[in-house]
Image (cartoon, rainbow, N blue to C red; front, side, top):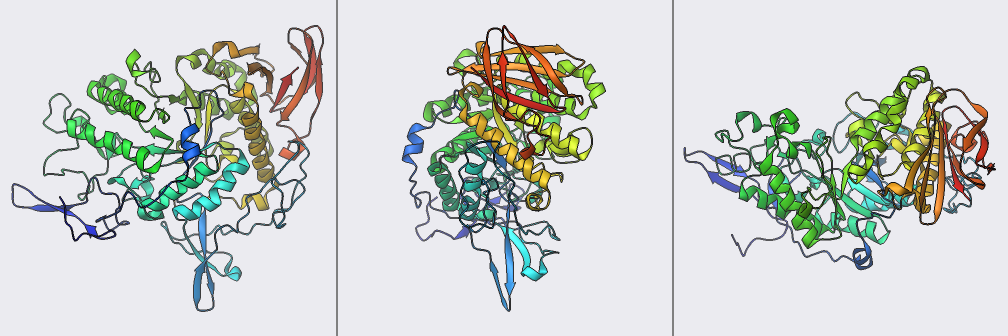
Length: 610
């Protein structure tokens, strides 16, 4: 359809007439823009009005198999909120760029305008007095809400950052904290904020909550020019049930599984989330989703797509007892094969909780063609282990060892995602056993174990500041704890230093899918709850030693063949991280295959082996 009078920014809908004489107004399934809820018209947008300047990044990016991949997962609307101020009769928003996220500057306060982002050692940074005043209050659930505090400062509410504004705030923070990629929860237009974008109505339309197409392109462009990759959460299993969306688009089940299809059955039309399942066996649906994936890669220069709910692609309704979803598997193989042919550099992630084999094997070798699979087993086992008191952990000692029994079956990514900090599950720090201080000590030890373990990393926003409040899409993360609570500030510093240690040591990321680059040193100390393993790659050896019990050791013996110097890289018990400073920056000597070291309760240590 071509209408010469149509102009950019104008709104439109399709009116679909049904056989019974009724009609429904529909948004354009392929529309590049949509109104913000509760309105639903499509908006004419140009695809060629933004010019990228990320040629160097695009020519050098790859799948990162032997590179550090440290992903920060965010919900665009709730990482930060922009304050709205009142001054007399005027209302205005804060200027972008004034917030300083240099949380770890050596000997500097965040009030110091000359703060230096550099550092010389991970263990000689003195505590700075951070003076941040943020509002915790809220009354509304959506894009603007009234503040219940800071009335003297003139803050009367908050709003979402738009795409350009968030780039100015987020990118310095990502660089400061050592992240290599940012993963965005779905940005397809969606009618309900509380769905976080997972029940979409506009699959080709970036949500208007944060601006337009060009704004998102500008965000991605800025990330690339700062050396940050961008991954988009992509929903291809189901869609929202709103009348103006894909539901009964032509008056029949066009995109959804037909109720009369005997090969699928009535039970498979609706998903477990109350949305409609895509009918992947239909050619029009497969074409729609393939075009959609290609559109986000081509038009927005996305570096990767994370595909949600792959278990529902593999098995009907994600349940193995209901059988293999053969047509959906054929679709996903075709989709992944096509993306790799057209965009060889793009990274494809599978969020899959099943034990189905060869998820990350190439399609031509009988696999599904993903590049990485989320290791949800590692996440569940680790968090479950740290929820037990020490005496019970002894009965679960092998739980920490289990991940390496299957690790080489796939190319795994280790994720502590948004799914683990909502709906009453508690946040990572709150899942830890024990008192306030014990929770922090264990969470630091767990973070160090996670970064030392083979596999790429992904962490949801708020994990890095040990946030106790579960995530809610209606308010920003609790960054104000960095000002008021020293333990949170120390933990944030630790999260940063662990990231930088991971990014800067090849043994922690090269060859991680090679069996020869990992081996256990200690895997049989159930009573002491001690573990140790070695990573080696790129001409470097790193020893990781962990005490996950509540008993410390002054001279714990560890056997490593040969004679070596063990130079400490990072110690989770360092004072600057809120610990007791046991053996901080200690050099350990290995003589005739033996050494002794101090191990604090609930702690971990990394050493370079020389």
